[in-house]
Image (cartoon, rainbow, N blue to C red; front, side):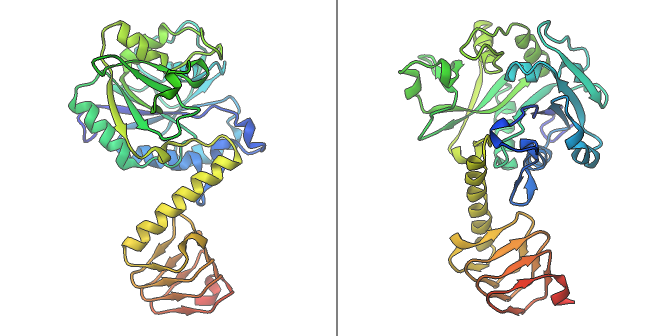
Amino acid sequence: MNEYNHSTCGLILAAGKGTRMKSTTPKVLHKVMGIPILERVYQTLSRSGVDQICLVLSEDTASLENFLCNHPETTVCIQKNRLGTGDAAAAAAKAFLDIEPPKWSAGELVKGQPISSEYILVFFGDTPAISAETIKVFLEHSFLKSADIAILGMEHPNPHGYGRLVTDDNGFLSRIVEEKDADANTKKITLCNSGIMLAKTELLFSLLQDLTPENAQKEYYLTDCFELAAQRNIPTCVFVSEDYQSFSGVNDRSQLAEIETYLVRKKIESTQKSGVTFHLPETTWIDESVVIGTDSEIGSHCILQGNTKIGKNCIIGSRCTIINCSIPDNTILENNRSYNQNDFN
């Protein structure tokens, strides 16, 4: 049981091919600040306090063998039909005890034992920028409201491409409308779906039973569960976040670059708050794993990668490339040089 006193399974939907990446590497294995997208998502869910994690993957799991070996406790299901987000969630039915899969779905449990979980937290495998703190607040809010089903929404200044959260006159969520199915008025709504939802396990799969592919994509939309819940008079708890940038997904190389830019900026800002000076910080690249001691200074146009640890009171010259180095306190590095650990042994 987790800190919320509700057993919760994190369900990561990661079966998409990612064809727009134009790569032989699966989309979820492309790196953001030195860490594969799927690993970042996994770490976020682990830190958010869920009890277990279940992955929904495509049948081609060979490329994910290293990831799965590093997370032997993870339950894995295969999505066979690729008929939308609802189909992806339905493919996980066999991962949960006493759950009947929807008749229209086809999933297979290939790793791990069936899970007994009161709630399921649904997460997409291509959203690497979401913080565990945001998820914790969402979970705490939802459990405080004793919600049977909840959605994490976001106010977005440019909502194009996102599903819109449509509320009734009392402010309750009535349905979520995908961009391709939205009319002109609905497209004006700025309250959008982040892609993250929480639901009681039995309720989620009961709603999935009633999904139909009657939409522009001819797919089973996971978001249609909220309209079905409203029809059953089950209110949806809506939690709204202002941090819309963190919910961006990665579908192509351009979006990958945008996410990295956003996260590098956050990493630098966090490091600055801990007492580090960056000269022209917008020119610096830093991996997630890099640690820098207080009162150190980082020159412009630096590249800091891998398991680099820079001590206190160091001065790193401009245009330095530092990879997997442990740099002692009070070190001064010259401009325009590349460094490796041999330089500090």
